[in-house]
Amino acid sequence: MSHFSRKLCKFILASCLAVSVASGAEIESRLRVQISERDFPGGPYCLAVGADSAVFVLDRGRAVLHRISPETGDVIWRIDGSESGEPFIDPAYISRPDGFFIYLTDRGSRKVWRIDYRGELRGSIDLSFATDPVLLELASGNQMVLYDRAISTIHLLDDSGRPLWSFPTGAGRKTGEPVDLCVSPDGSKLYLLWPDPLAVTSFNIYGRTSSSLPLTSDSISPRLLAAAALAGGSEALCLAESGGAVLVLDPLSGSTGKLYVTDERIWDIRAAPDEPGVLYLLAGKEVVLIKIKLETGD
Image 1: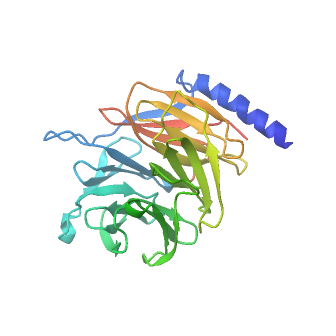
Image 2: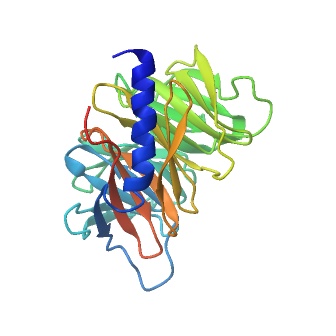
């Protein structure tokens, strides 16, 4: 298939999705997440989805991490760090799980907590070199990508937390800061989402090369970003705004197509690592996990 044909197919696919997802045909499941507390409202929430549909939800307001059953929405376990004698202070982000652990970034203690799939703390990584660590993701080669907001710098760390490489996020920008980041499905590229002007910057994992993908949509102000693997080895970038709209972006052409519109608040979006073409949304006041199929075939 020619490059033009592939782009045409993607455009047609995006157009079809704009109709089928909005009408509910491509929504595979909608599951109420049972994390309500009576004391005070929770949120904002962060979502992580691992292999075999392992689902984790971080309630930043209550400083609690939950593992959720993908079949029932029930809480399998919850953890707030108190078992270590150091409760989470200001948890900011959770990485995509690696099959054994999930990593939680705590701005308050400047640590990354390593938590296993049974809900037990397995040590922490000291981030004393970072002034305001807010975003963390796993990259290829057992490495981690950390964004330090205070100095607008990306740090590449090994699996013990030792800094290997650092580079500024600007890629020619003089002002502003990225609002979200994600790593490509193969872990080799880093994507940063910029709000003003709206754009996505792509870096190789060492920051040695970069490119910018300007977005032309005037009707959406996305603050969330996820990279989804598609059948055939390609990928799509999925962008969402809290108001309820989701766009898909072709990272090669920069073209976009609207995938999903809801009147619920979208808290977070994540791609499933072992389910090509699947996107998960965490949305709503009564929090629900929405599973969307981005494509129907190759």
